[in-house]
Each structure stands twice: as C-alpha cells, then as structure tokens.
Length: 294
Ligand code: GUN
Image 1: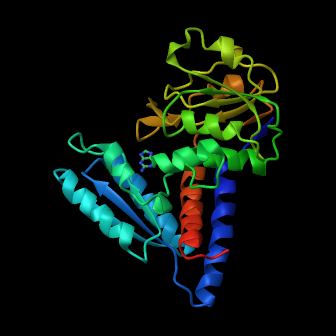
Image 2: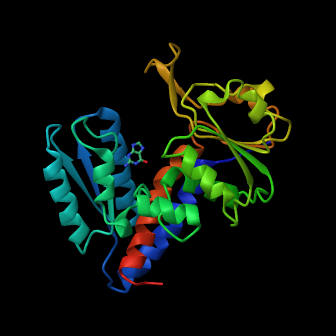
C-alpha cells in the first residue's frame, strides 16, 4: 500500500510556483495578486483565509484580505467585487463561503470576472470545465487530479466512483475524471444519499473518491482489494486523549480500508494541503492569462 502524501506534493507545487515567481521578480515584472474577501466573523473561515494569505506571501504572490462586517449589504459587496474586477494588480478574487444569509451567494459568484475566478465556481468556469476547455478549476478536485497524476496512478478506463454531489467537490471531480486527459479518462459513477445501499457502488470502484462529510463512513467491507482511495472528508470527532479534545478524521475508516487499498490519502495530510496549493496555481494561471505571459 502506498500512502499518498498530499503535504509533500503540495510543498513541491508551492516550490515550483515560487521559482517561477522569483524569475518574474528578477525580470522586474508585475507580480501576481490575490484578494480574499471575508464577510463576518466565522472562526473557521477566518482561519482558512489567513492560511491562504500566508501561503501566497511565502511564494511571492501579493495578497490582500478584505474583512467586512457581518451586516455588509449585498450591494456593497458587489461594488467591492467590481472594484477588484477592474484592479490591474489583482488577478484572483476569492470570496470565502459561506456568506451571511442575507447575501445571495450565486449572485456574488456570478459577478466575479471569470478570468479572476480562482475558485472555479463561476458558471462560465464550470461550463468550460464540463466541455473540457482550459479554465480555472475548483481547487479541491484539481488537487485530486494532480495527486493522481504525480503518483502516476493508472486512471484510464478505470471505474472511478464518487460519493457525494456537492458543487465544490462531487460534481466537479466527477466531470474532471471523465475528461479525456492525463490523470482522468475514467468510467465515472456518482452516488449519494439517495442511493440506499452505497456499498453496491463503492465495491465496484477501482478509484474511490469519498466526499460525504461523515466521519469514518466508508468501511473495509465496502471496497474491493487494490482500490485507490481519495478521502476528501475533514470531520472533527471527540478525542479526550488529546488536549484540544478532538481529532480530525476523513470520510474513510483509514484503519480498515488501508488494509485493502493499493493507494490511500491520509486525513490530515492528504487532499487538504493540496487545496491551497492549487489555489496558488490557479492564481498564477489567471495572472499569466491576464498579463499575456506564456
Ligand atoms: N469555503 C469552504 N471551502 C471553500 C472554497 O474552496 N472556496 C471558498 N471561496 N470558500 C470555501
């Protein structure tokens, strides 16, 4: 069994990007810029935004956090987005989700310039992804494809089973696995909470992508021998043996499933670190496209 080390792979990607940005600095060129917009005081969102900001700074991407009050109106948020759509030093705009209830998330996403849509959530980005055009891809699924590529896992003609149908992971990864491209070209099944007995589907998976949001949900008897397992879950479970009182586990029961898997991502240290690395990659891609650099 090979453990897929997302932390190490994410570091490699960050190093590669840093080298490219260092050479832009040496050439005296404009550097890439990202703005992250955070509305309200949700502690988890605040933590994610700060990690994204720090990761940018480490590789030389200029980054700015716009922290807005919980009661900010939709009109004011739209005005701010419009100002960054026009800002020539900003190549990526990320509005941290979820937004407060009085703001229409779809409306906000649709007002981000698709060229700066580093989350890959704009309907134009999603449409291009489905067609197979080059675009900005949602960061977590993009990170999964990158892990499959870098570990040279054979995906062509294999049966990829995705459990979960969210707009952030399930739907986009199913579409990306379908594309006739490296790290994909698979036969894809998507299953979800309406499936009844999910194991009917998961047992047939050569590649199992679990994005369910339930701790340790996939058990050893739900997979076949030799399966490649990508665990997207991040779930807190109580653990009185550690001082913070909880630990983070995936959607896959690692102890059971790792005994049957050929490859598996751990939680933490699997898909999670890849998400930020791919955000940086998207921001660099957006920069190159906007600044017309090959
Ligand atoms: N909230 C949780 N995940 C994400 C993400 O990938 N992007 C944004 N913008 N918000 C999130």
